[in-house]
Image 1 (cartoon, rainbow, N blue to C red):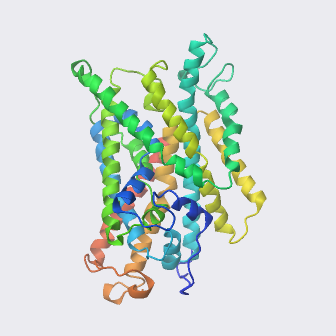
Image 2 (cartoon, rainbow, N blue to C red):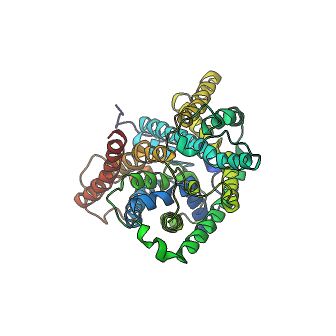
Image 3 (cartoon, one colour):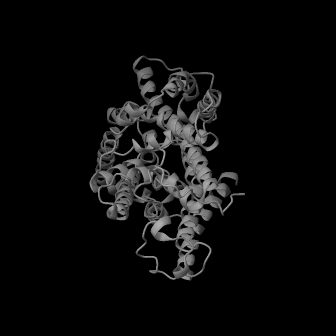
Length: 456
Protein backbone atom coordinates (compact mmCIF):
# COMPACT_ATOMS: atom_id res chain seq x y z
CA UNK A 1 0.00 0.00 0.00
CA UNK A 2 1.28 3.48 -0.78
CA UNK A 3 2.51 5.24 2.34
CA UNK A 4 0.73 8.58 2.57
CA UNK A 5 3.15 9.91 5.18
CA UNK A 6 6.14 9.99 2.86
CA UNK A 7 7.22 13.52 2.08
CA UNK A 8 9.77 15.34 0.06
CA UNK A 9 13.39 16.00 0.73
CA UNK A 10 13.38 19.71 1.52
CA UNK A 11 17.00 20.25 0.62
CA UNK A 12 17.84 22.97 -1.84
CA UNK A 13 19.83 20.83 -4.24
CA UNK A 14 18.76 21.23 -7.88
CA UNK A 15 16.34 18.75 -9.38
CA UNK A 16 17.75 16.02 -11.57
CA UNK A 17 16.14 15.61 -14.98
CA UNK A 18 15.57 11.93 -15.73
CA UNK A 19 15.94 10.60 -19.27
CA UNK A 20 12.19 10.11 -19.71
CA UNK A 21 11.55 13.71 -18.61
CA UNK A 22 14.32 14.97 -20.88
CA UNK A 23 12.69 13.21 -23.84
CA UNK A 24 9.23 14.53 -22.90
CA UNK A 25 10.57 18.07 -22.64
CA UNK A 26 11.56 17.80 -26.32
CA UNK A 27 7.84 17.59 -27.15
CA UNK A 28 7.70 21.29 -26.41
CA UNK A 29 8.39 23.62 -29.31
CA UNK A 30 10.74 25.74 -27.20
CA UNK A 31 14.49 25.48 -27.67
CA UNK A 32 16.42 23.90 -24.83
CA UNK A 33 16.65 26.34 -21.90
CA UNK A 34 14.72 29.11 -23.68
CA UNK A 35 11.40 30.66 -22.74
CA UNK A 36 8.43 30.37 -25.06
CA UNK A 37 5.38 32.50 -25.70
CA UNK A 38 1.86 31.54 -24.71
CA UNK A 39 1.13 30.86 -28.38
CA UNK A 40 3.94 28.28 -28.55
CA UNK A 41 2.77 26.74 -25.28
CA UNK A 42 -0.79 26.44 -26.57
CA UNK A 43 0.39 24.96 -29.84
CA UNK A 44 2.62 22.43 -28.06
CA UNK A 45 -0.13 21.22 -25.72
CA UNK A 46 -2.73 21.05 -28.49
CA UNK A 47 -0.31 19.17 -30.75
CA UNK A 48 0.26 16.62 -27.98
CA UNK A 49 -3.48 15.99 -27.69
CA UNK A 50 -4.63 16.00 -31.30
CA UNK A 51 -3.21 13.12 -33.30
CA UNK A 52 -4.02 9.52 -34.05
CA UNK A 53 -7.53 9.72 -32.57
CA UNK A 54 -8.60 11.87 -35.52
CA UNK A 55 -8.55 8.81 -37.79
CA UNK A 56 -11.00 6.96 -35.57
CA UNK A 57 -13.62 9.40 -34.30
CA UNK A 58 -15.68 10.09 -37.49
CA UNK A 59 -17.12 6.56 -37.59
CA UNK A 60 -17.70 6.73 -33.83
CA UNK A 61 -19.78 9.89 -34.37
CA UNK A 62 -21.64 8.10 -37.17
CA UNK A 63 -22.37 4.97 -35.12
CA UNK A 64 -23.06 6.49 -31.70
CA UNK A 65 -24.70 9.75 -32.72
CA UNK A 66 -23.31 13.21 -33.34
CA UNK A 67 -25.06 14.86 -30.39
CA UNK A 68 -24.18 11.97 -28.09
CA UNK A 69 -20.51 12.24 -28.98
CA UNK A 70 -20.45 16.03 -28.63
CA UNK A 71 -22.00 15.80 -25.15
CA UNK A 72 -19.53 13.12 -24.04
CA UNK A 73 -16.67 15.10 -25.55
CA UNK A 74 -17.67 18.29 -23.71
CA UNK A 75 -17.96 16.50 -20.35
CA UNK A 76 -14.60 14.78 -20.62
CA UNK A 77 -12.92 17.91 -21.95
CA UNK A 78 -14.03 19.92 -18.91
CA UNK A 79 -13.31 17.16 -16.41
CA UNK A 80 -9.86 16.34 -17.72
CA UNK A 81 -8.98 20.01 -18.14
CA UNK A 82 -9.73 20.51 -14.45
CA UNK A 83 -7.56 17.61 -13.29
CA UNK A 84 -4.81 18.63 -15.71
CA UNK A 85 -4.98 22.17 -14.35
CA UNK A 86 -4.24 20.77 -10.92
CA UNK A 87 -1.03 19.32 -12.32
CA UNK A 88 0.23 22.80 -13.25
CA UNK A 89 -1.05 25.08 -10.48
CA UNK A 90 0.96 23.16 -7.87
CA UNK A 91 4.18 23.01 -9.90
CA UNK A 92 6.96 25.29 -8.70
CA UNK A 93 8.98 27.25 -11.20
CA UNK A 94 12.20 25.42 -10.35
CA UNK A 95 10.59 22.00 -10.80
CA UNK A 96 11.42 20.48 -14.18
CA UNK A 97 8.43 18.16 -14.49
CA UNK A 98 5.38 16.76 -12.70
CA UNK A 99 7.39 14.00 -11.01
CA UNK A 100 9.23 16.45 -8.77
CA UNK A 101 5.94 18.09 -7.77
CA UNK A 102 4.33 14.75 -6.93
CA UNK A 103 7.36 13.68 -4.91
CA UNK A 104 7.28 16.97 -2.99
CA UNK A 105 3.58 16.78 -2.16
CA UNK A 106 2.81 13.06 -1.99
CA UNK A 107 6.11 11.24 -1.51
CA UNK A 108 8.29 8.76 -3.32
CA UNK A 109 5.75 5.93 -3.58
CA UNK A 110 3.23 8.10 -5.40
CA UNK A 111 5.99 9.26 -7.71
CA UNK A 112 6.73 5.64 -8.57
CA UNK A 113 3.01 5.01 -9.13
CA UNK A 114 2.96 8.00 -11.49
CA UNK A 115 5.94 6.64 -13.45
CA UNK A 116 4.49 3.14 -13.78
CA UNK A 117 1.08 4.48 -14.82
CA UNK A 118 2.54 6.91 -17.35
CA UNK A 119 4.92 4.24 -18.65
CA UNK A 120 2.06 1.77 -19.12
CA UNK A 121 -0.08 4.37 -20.86
CA UNK A 122 2.70 5.26 -23.32
CA UNK A 123 3.48 1.56 -23.80
CA UNK A 124 -0.06 1.07 -25.11
CA UNK A 125 0.12 4.28 -27.18
CA UNK A 126 3.06 2.63 -28.96
CA UNK A 127 0.89 -0.42 -29.67
CA UNK A 128 -1.84 1.88 -31.04
CA UNK A 129 0.68 3.48 -33.39
CA UNK A 130 1.81 0.03 -34.57
CA UNK A 131 -1.80 -0.81 -35.41
CA UNK A 132 -2.37 2.48 -37.21
CA UNK A 133 0.84 2.00 -39.23
CA UNK A 134 -0.55 -1.31 -40.43
CA UNK A 135 -4.00 0.16 -41.12
CA UNK A 136 -2.60 3.01 -43.23
CA UNK A 137 0.03 0.92 -45.03
CA UNK A 138 -2.27 -1.94 -46.09
CA UNK A 139 -4.54 0.09 -48.45
CA UNK A 140 -1.44 1.45 -50.16
CA UNK A 141 -0.20 -2.10 -50.76
CA UNK A 142 -3.65 -3.13 -51.97
CA UNK A 143 -3.52 -0.38 -54.60
CA UNK A 144 -0.11 -1.62 -55.72
CA UNK A 145 -1.49 -5.17 -55.94
CA UNK A 146 -4.46 -4.02 -58.01
CA UNK A 147 -2.22 -2.12 -60.42
CA UNK A 148 -0.04 -5.23 -60.70
CA UNK A 149 -3.05 -7.56 -61.27
CA UNK A 150 -2.18 -9.47 -58.10
CA UNK A 151 -5.37 -10.79 -56.50
CA UNK A 152 -4.26 -13.18 -53.75
CA UNK A 153 -4.76 -10.77 -50.86
CA UNK A 154 -7.31 -10.43 -48.08
CA UNK A 155 -9.85 -7.67 -47.61
CA UNK A 156 -10.61 -6.27 -44.14
CA UNK A 157 -13.85 -8.26 -43.88
CA UNK A 158 -11.84 -11.51 -44.07
CA UNK A 159 -10.66 -11.04 -40.48
CA UNK A 160 -7.67 -13.09 -39.33
CA UNK A 161 -6.20 -14.64 -42.47
CA UNK A 162 -2.94 -16.45 -43.14
CA UNK A 163 -3.71 -18.42 -46.33
CA UNK A 164 -3.10 -15.32 -48.44
CA UNK A 165 -1.45 -11.95 -48.03
CA UNK A 166 -3.21 -10.09 -45.23
CA UNK A 167 -2.68 -7.39 -42.67
CA UNK A 168 -1.38 -10.11 -40.36
CA UNK A 169 1.38 -11.06 -42.83
CA UNK A 170 2.11 -7.38 -43.32
CA UNK A 171 2.55 -6.98 -39.54
CA UNK A 172 5.03 -9.85 -39.50
CA UNK A 173 6.98 -8.31 -42.39
CA UNK A 174 7.26 -4.82 -40.86
CA UNK A 175 7.93 -6.26 -37.40
CA UNK A 176 11.73 -6.24 -37.74
CA UNK A 177 12.09 -2.81 -39.42
CA UNK A 178 9.99 -1.19 -36.70
CA UNK A 179 11.78 -3.18 -34.00
CA UNK A 180 15.10 -1.87 -35.27
CA UNK A 181 13.88 1.68 -34.53
CA UNK A 182 13.91 0.78 -30.83
CA UNK A 183 17.72 0.57 -31.03
CA UNK A 184 17.97 4.36 -31.24
CA UNK A 185 19.87 5.75 -28.25
CA UNK A 186 18.87 9.37 -28.79
CA UNK A 187 15.46 10.32 -30.19
CA UNK A 188 15.97 14.09 -30.23
CA UNK A 189 15.96 14.31 -34.04
CA UNK A 190 13.03 11.89 -34.24
CA UNK A 191 10.97 14.11 -31.94
CA UNK A 192 11.84 17.22 -33.94
CA UNK A 193 10.76 15.48 -37.15
CA UNK A 194 7.57 14.23 -35.49
CA UNK A 195 6.58 17.84 -34.85
CA UNK A 196 5.87 18.08 -38.58
CA UNK A 197 3.06 15.58 -38.08
CA UNK A 198 0.86 18.65 -37.78
CA UNK A 199 1.03 18.80 -41.61
CA UNK A 200 -0.77 15.45 -41.79
CA UNK A 201 -3.46 16.71 -39.39
CA UNK A 202 -3.99 19.90 -41.43
CA UNK A 203 -4.30 17.98 -44.71
CA UNK A 204 -6.62 15.50 -43.03
CA UNK A 205 -8.86 18.35 -41.81
CA UNK A 206 -8.99 19.73 -45.36
CA UNK A 207 -9.98 16.26 -46.59
CA UNK A 208 -12.72 16.02 -43.94
CA UNK A 209 -14.11 19.41 -44.96
CA UNK A 210 -14.03 18.33 -48.62
CA UNK A 211 -16.00 15.10 -48.12
CA UNK A 212 -18.42 16.96 -45.84
CA UNK A 213 -19.03 19.62 -48.51
CA UNK A 214 -19.49 16.98 -51.20
CA UNK A 215 -22.21 15.21 -49.20
CA UNK A 216 -23.88 18.46 -48.19
CA UNK A 217 -24.53 19.13 -51.87
CA UNK A 218 -26.63 15.95 -51.87
CA UNK A 219 -27.89 16.17 -48.31
CA UNK A 220 -31.48 15.28 -49.29
CA UNK A 221 -30.27 11.83 -50.33
CA UNK A 222 -28.46 11.13 -47.06
CA UNK A 223 -30.11 13.16 -44.30
CA UNK A 224 -32.12 10.14 -43.22
CA UNK A 225 -28.88 8.26 -42.60
CA UNK A 226 -27.55 10.74 -40.05
CA UNK A 227 -27.50 9.36 -36.51
CA UNK A 228 -28.01 12.29 -34.15
CA UNK A 229 -28.47 10.65 -30.78
CA UNK A 230 -28.18 7.20 -29.19
CA UNK A 231 -27.55 5.96 -25.67
CA UNK A 232 -24.36 4.29 -26.84
CA UNK A 233 -21.82 6.58 -25.15
CA UNK A 234 -19.32 3.88 -24.09
CA UNK A 235 -17.06 4.02 -27.13
CA UNK A 236 -16.77 7.83 -27.35
CA UNK A 237 -16.22 8.05 -23.58
CA UNK A 238 -13.14 5.84 -23.70
CA UNK A 239 -11.74 7.48 -26.81
CA UNK A 240 -12.17 11.05 -25.65
CA UNK A 241 -10.63 10.10 -22.30
CA UNK A 242 -7.60 9.14 -24.38
CA UNK A 243 -7.80 12.21 -26.61
CA UNK A 244 -7.77 14.75 -23.77
CA UNK A 245 -4.98 13.15 -21.77
CA UNK A 246 -1.72 15.13 -21.50
CA UNK A 247 -1.34 14.86 -17.73
CA UNK A 248 1.94 12.95 -17.83
CA UNK A 249 3.69 15.52 -20.04
CA UNK A 250 1.98 18.83 -19.22
CA UNK A 251 4.65 19.72 -16.66
CA UNK A 252 7.34 19.69 -19.34
CA UNK A 253 5.12 21.43 -21.89
CA UNK A 254 4.43 24.48 -19.69
CA UNK A 255 7.68 24.79 -17.76
CA UNK A 256 9.23 27.14 -20.37
CA UNK A 257 6.21 29.41 -20.61
CA UNK A 258 7.52 32.97 -20.33
CA UNK A 259 4.52 34.12 -18.29
CA UNK A 260 3.72 31.49 -15.66
CA UNK A 261 0.58 33.34 -14.62
CA UNK A 262 -0.94 32.41 -18.00
CA UNK A 263 -0.44 28.67 -17.56
CA UNK A 264 -4.05 27.87 -16.60
CA UNK A 265 -5.41 30.17 -19.30
CA UNK A 266 -3.13 28.64 -21.95
CA UNK A 267 -4.12 25.13 -20.87
CA UNK A 268 -7.83 26.04 -21.11
CA UNK A 269 -7.34 27.46 -24.60
CA UNK A 270 -5.45 24.31 -25.63
CA UNK A 271 -8.26 22.07 -24.44
CA UNK A 272 -10.80 24.30 -26.16
CA UNK A 273 -8.95 24.17 -29.48
CA UNK A 274 -8.56 20.38 -29.22
CA UNK A 275 -12.30 20.02 -28.50
CA UNK A 276 -13.19 22.19 -31.51
CA UNK A 277 -10.90 20.13 -33.77
CA UNK A 278 -12.32 16.84 -32.50
CA UNK A 279 -15.87 18.18 -32.84
CA UNK A 280 -15.36 19.37 -36.42
CA UNK A 281 -13.56 16.21 -37.53
CA UNK A 282 -16.16 13.98 -35.84
CA UNK A 283 -19.26 15.85 -37.07
CA UNK A 284 -18.03 16.71 -40.56
CA UNK A 285 -16.45 13.28 -40.97
CA UNK A 286 -19.64 11.47 -39.92
CA UNK A 287 -21.67 13.45 -42.47
CA UNK A 288 -18.92 13.02 -45.07
CA UNK A 289 -19.13 9.21 -44.97
CA UNK A 290 -22.92 9.06 -45.25
CA UNK A 291 -23.91 6.73 -48.06
CA UNK A 292 -20.65 4.79 -47.77
CA UNK A 293 -20.33 1.38 -46.16
CA UNK A 294 -17.47 -0.52 -44.59
CA UNK A 295 -17.29 -3.86 -42.79
CA UNK A 296 -15.76 -3.59 -39.32
CA UNK A 297 -14.10 -0.23 -40.03
CA UNK A 298 -11.12 0.74 -37.89
CA UNK A 299 -10.60 4.22 -39.32
CA UNK A 300 -12.54 6.59 -41.56
CA UNK A 301 -10.24 5.69 -44.46
CA UNK A 302 -11.83 2.20 -44.57
CA UNK A 303 -14.95 3.80 -46.08
CA UNK A 304 -13.12 4.79 -49.25
CA UNK A 305 -11.75 2.90 -52.22
CA UNK A 306 -8.03 2.12 -52.27
CA UNK A 307 -7.92 3.74 -55.72
CA UNK A 308 -9.03 7.11 -54.34
CA UNK A 309 -5.85 9.15 -54.69
CA UNK A 310 -6.94 11.81 -52.20
CA UNK A 311 -7.32 9.09 -49.56
CA UNK A 312 -4.02 7.58 -50.66
CA UNK A 313 -2.31 10.94 -50.12
CA UNK A 314 -3.75 11.24 -46.59
CA UNK A 315 -2.72 7.66 -45.81
CA UNK A 316 0.80 8.38 -47.03
CA UNK A 317 1.13 11.49 -44.86
CA UNK A 318 -0.18 9.72 -41.77
CA UNK A 319 2.05 6.72 -42.45
CA UNK A 320 5.17 8.91 -42.48
CA UNK A 321 4.04 10.65 -39.29
CA UNK A 322 3.15 7.40 -37.51
CA UNK A 323 6.43 5.69 -38.41
CA UNK A 324 8.44 8.75 -37.35
CA UNK A 325 6.65 9.01 -33.99
CA UNK A 326 6.56 5.26 -33.32
CA UNK A 327 9.85 4.90 -31.35
CA UNK A 328 9.14 7.93 -29.12
CA UNK A 329 6.51 6.22 -26.98
CA UNK A 330 8.35 2.99 -26.11
CA UNK A 331 11.52 5.01 -25.51
CA UNK A 332 9.87 7.21 -22.86
CA UNK A 333 7.77 4.34 -21.50
CA UNK A 334 10.74 2.02 -20.96
CA UNK A 335 12.79 4.71 -19.25
CA UNK A 336 9.90 5.61 -16.94
CA UNK A 337 9.61 1.98 -15.89
CA UNK A 338 13.38 1.69 -15.43
CA UNK A 339 13.48 4.88 -13.37
CA UNK A 340 10.90 3.35 -11.04
CA UNK A 341 13.24 0.55 -10.01
CA UNK A 342 16.71 1.94 -10.68
CA UNK A 343 18.18 5.35 -9.89
CA UNK A 344 21.57 5.49 -11.59
CA UNK A 345 22.41 2.70 -14.02
CA UNK A 346 19.83 0.70 -15.92
CA UNK A 347 20.62 -2.99 -16.54
CA UNK A 348 20.96 -3.68 -20.27
CA UNK A 349 19.15 -7.00 -19.95
CA UNK A 350 16.14 -5.28 -18.40
CA UNK A 351 16.08 -2.67 -21.18
CA UNK A 352 16.27 -5.29 -23.90
CA UNK A 353 13.61 -7.35 -22.14
CA UNK A 354 11.17 -4.43 -22.03
CA UNK A 355 11.82 -3.63 -25.69
CA UNK A 356 11.15 -7.27 -26.62
CA UNK A 357 7.93 -7.33 -24.60
CA UNK A 358 6.78 -4.11 -26.28
CA UNK A 359 7.40 -5.08 -29.91
CA UNK A 360 6.01 -8.60 -29.37
CA UNK A 361 2.89 -7.10 -27.77
CA UNK A 362 2.45 -4.91 -30.85
CA UNK A 363 2.64 -7.95 -33.11
CA UNK A 364 0.30 -10.08 -31.00
CA UNK A 365 -2.39 -7.37 -30.88
CA UNK A 366 -2.25 -7.02 -34.67
CA UNK A 367 -2.19 -10.77 -35.33
CA UNK A 368 -5.37 -11.18 -33.30
CA UNK A 369 -6.92 -8.29 -35.24
CA UNK A 370 -8.00 -6.40 -32.12
CA UNK A 371 -9.86 -3.26 -33.14
CA UNK A 372 -7.73 -0.18 -32.56
CA UNK A 373 -10.73 1.66 -31.10
CA UNK A 374 -10.92 -0.87 -28.27
CA UNK A 375 -7.23 -0.42 -27.48
CA UNK A 376 -7.62 3.38 -27.50
CA UNK A 377 -10.62 3.18 -25.15
CA UNK A 378 -8.77 0.82 -22.79
CA UNK A 379 -5.81 3.17 -22.63
CA UNK A 380 -7.99 6.21 -22.00
CA UNK A 381 -10.62 4.82 -19.63
CA UNK A 382 -8.55 2.29 -17.65
CA UNK A 383 -4.81 2.96 -17.89
CA UNK A 384 -5.19 6.69 -17.41
CA UNK A 385 -7.49 6.52 -14.37
CA UNK A 386 -4.81 6.86 -11.67
CA UNK A 387 -2.93 9.49 -13.66
CA UNK A 388 -5.94 11.62 -14.60
CA UNK A 389 -8.10 11.35 -11.48
CA UNK A 390 -6.56 9.85 -8.35
CA UNK A 391 -3.15 11.55 -8.31
CA UNK A 392 -4.30 15.11 -9.19
CA UNK A 393 -7.28 15.12 -6.82
CA UNK A 394 -5.39 13.57 -3.91
CA UNK A 395 -2.48 15.96 -4.48
CA UNK A 396 -4.86 18.93 -4.58
CA UNK A 397 -6.47 18.11 -1.24
CA UNK A 398 -3.14 17.19 0.30
CA UNK A 399 -1.77 20.60 -0.61
CA UNK A 400 -4.83 22.68 0.31
CA UNK A 401 -5.85 20.89 3.48
CA UNK A 402 -3.27 18.31 4.50
CA UNK A 403 -4.66 16.35 7.44
CA UNK A 404 -6.90 19.21 8.64
CA UNK A 405 -10.44 20.19 7.79
CA UNK A 406 -9.89 23.93 8.11
CA UNK A 407 -8.24 25.80 5.27
CA UNK A 408 -6.82 28.32 7.72
CA UNK A 409 -5.02 25.49 9.56
CA UNK A 410 -3.69 23.86 6.36
CA UNK A 411 -1.09 21.20 7.06
CA UNK A 412 1.37 22.45 4.47
CA UNK A 413 3.17 25.78 4.58
CA UNK A 414 2.27 27.18 1.16
CA UNK A 415 5.13 29.65 1.16
CA UNK A 416 7.75 26.90 1.36
CA UNK A 417 6.10 23.61 0.41
CA UNK A 418 3.87 24.76 -2.43
CA UNK A 419 3.13 27.74 -4.59
CA UNK A 420 1.07 30.61 -3.23
CA UNK A 421 -2.55 29.70 -3.94
CA UNK A 422 -4.63 32.84 -4.27
CA UNK A 423 -7.94 30.98 -4.56
CA UNK A 424 -7.54 28.67 -1.58
CA UNK A 425 -10.59 30.17 0.19
CA UNK A 426 -12.66 30.47 -2.98
CA UNK A 427 -14.64 27.29 -2.23
CA UNK A 428 -15.61 25.78 1.09
CA UNK A 429 -14.24 22.36 1.92
CA UNK A 430 -17.64 20.53 1.64
CA UNK A 431 -18.36 22.10 -1.75
CA UNK A 432 -14.85 21.32 -2.99
CA UNK A 433 -15.27 17.70 -1.87
CA UNK A 434 -18.59 17.40 -3.73
CA UNK A 435 -17.11 18.85 -6.94
CA UNK A 436 -14.15 16.51 -6.96
CA UNK A 437 -16.28 13.49 -6.02
CA UNK A 438 -18.35 14.21 -9.13
CA UNK A 439 -15.17 14.45 -11.21
CA UNK A 440 -13.88 11.21 -9.72
CA UNK A 441 -17.24 9.53 -10.39
CA UNK A 442 -16.89 10.36 -14.09
CA UNK A 443 -13.58 8.49 -14.21
CA UNK A 444 -14.89 5.51 -12.25
CA UNK A 445 -18.04 5.31 -14.39
CA UNK A 446 -16.00 5.48 -17.59
CA UNK A 447 -13.80 2.62 -16.44
CA UNK A 448 -16.75 0.46 -15.35
CA UNK A 449 -18.70 0.87 -18.58
CA UNK A 450 -15.60 -0.01 -20.62
CA UNK A 451 -15.26 -3.36 -18.85
CA UNK A 452 -19.02 -3.92 -19.06
CA UNK A 453 -19.01 -3.37 -22.81
CA UNK A 454 -15.86 -5.45 -23.31
CA UNK A 455 -17.03 -8.54 -21.41
CA UNK A 456 -20.75 -8.50 -22.23
